[in-house]
Each structure stands twice: as C-alpha cells, then as structure tokens.
Length: 311
Image (cartoon, rainbow, N blue to C red; front, top):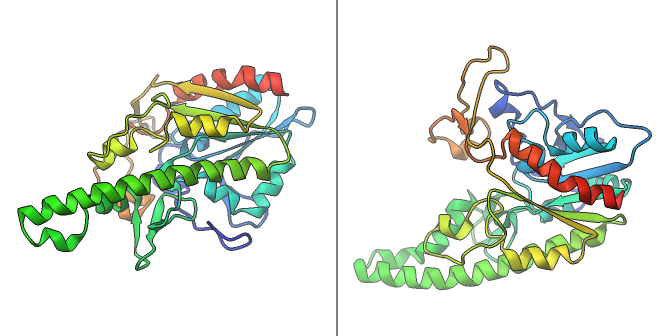
C-alpha cells in the first residue's frame, strides 16, 4: 500500500490515449499529485456525494458517467474520484482524498478489481501494475499471474515431464495466492469503509453477476470480466459493512464505436499511449472493455433509489 503522504504512483489518466475521442478535463486534487476527471458544477443546496472506483467510475469514452447523471437526477454535488486501475488499497493510502470523502454526506464505493490488490508475491500500491517482491521487476497483472500459473522456470528446461510438473506446482501456488489475494481484497475494502465517517454504498457495476466460476485453467478464466477475481463471497463480506448496496449488470451499447470529437469520423486509439507495456496491441476502433454510455445510464438507474433512501 502507498504510505500516507508519499507520492502516488500513476497508472493511467486515460487522457493521452483518448484525447481524440473525449476531453476528460483532468484536475488535480489540492496539490495531492492525484488527478481526477472534472466533476459537474457543485450544487450549493444539495447533498455532496463522492464516487470512488476505477475506470468504470471514471467513465472512459463516456461524456456523462453515472456520477454526472446522478447529479442531474438528484440535484447533488457529485465528486468523481474514479482512478485508472485502482483497487481499494489505493484509496486507503491517500490521506487528502480520505479527508475529502469524509467531508461528504455519502460515499459510493465501486467493487474494484482483485488484480489491483497486493499479496505475498506482488506489491501493487493498489494499482494493476505490479512489482514482483523477489526482485523488484514491474509487470502487468496478466503477466504476473501467468508466470505463477506456468510454475518454476527451471523445470521447463527438463522437457515435457518438467513442464507438466511445473504446471502442477504452478497451479497449486496460484490457488494459494488467489485465496490470499481475495481475503486481502475484502480486508482492504472493510478498512476503507472503516476509514469513512460517513455512510457508504457498495456498488457492483459489471457485464457479469458476482458469481464467478473458480477456474484456474488460464489467467483469463481465473480473472473473468471486471472486477477480476471478485466473486459472490467477497461482495457479500463487504456489503454487510455498508449502509446500502446496488448492483448493475449490463452490456447495453457494448461494443461502443469510437468517433473523433473534432470531426465525428471513426477513429482508433492506441493503448500504448496510456501504458507503454501495452504496446504491440492492435489499435482500438471500438470500446470493448469499459462500460458504454448506455451502461452508465443503467448504472445511474440502479443507484438512484438507494441514494434517494440514504439522502
């Protein structure tokens, strides 16, 4: 976890990658070194609600993410603190941000990815770009969990039998690491809720339900759709500590074609403009991963009655 008061490690602000499609109007939070998407103008007469989460709360490729839509519907001041690749551990380490959260009337906490959680093998700082503890090597979560699954490298040099043995050992180690990571993710969320002096709403926003098959065959089958590695048990453990819970499962409008904000013509974006380690991927002509604008509308509808009751 990022130590309180230490400079935050930036994973993504998305603006460089997406600049042809949308201007997020990034602003810094009180000399904290943290940059967030601009929020709607404050409503002096309304309640103040903070929204924390990852890219899904931030609203990649979306003019009006669900915090903006709820500000319009409820007449609230909505503060969008969505941060690229973030997990609960990231927000725990940011003192100035926690102060801001505690100055609100309510905080909505998105169910964030399990791959952004630190464990005994990898330090994350609460973000999805990991550091291998054994030697300090930095690598993305997909690569990190793949190397665990493939098992000890030395065994592969012994031929087919060695490769088989390595994979058996790798899967056993991966099982232990996943269980450890899931418990740590729950603890980070509970610690985050405990750090708040105001009520919290836990929010599931995904293309899938919280139910996730326990499949360690590949990294893809382990992670599942966002939020990666998070299952029903984890959600239930956290939601019990919150004042409210909302669940939005939607694929409406996905995939989302990408168009230039200047010309209206179809465009592509290069993921390497966001993170160099993503170089070599094909450019995107569609948003296949992040929630579409229609999905953000569905998210706002799901949160609306819960926020009305609590405010």
